[in-house]
Length: 80
Image (cartoon, rainbow, N blue to C red; front, side, top):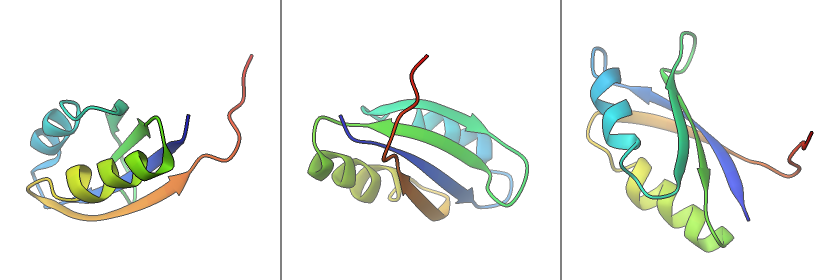
């Protein structure tokens, strides 16, 4: 199952609203507001790489008040 971390920059003051909307998107497994260069980090998963790209491109990046994103595809997942 393909997964990715998506780092998100929002418009100033809109972090909470974007985070709330982000958590409603199917495929978003986790999402957190963070301090630093980015405002939000989300982990996204899908059945296929095409579906993952579709979620990031057409759902996450199109959210109102999202200014930019950086997507990092997970190549190896650590298990305990």
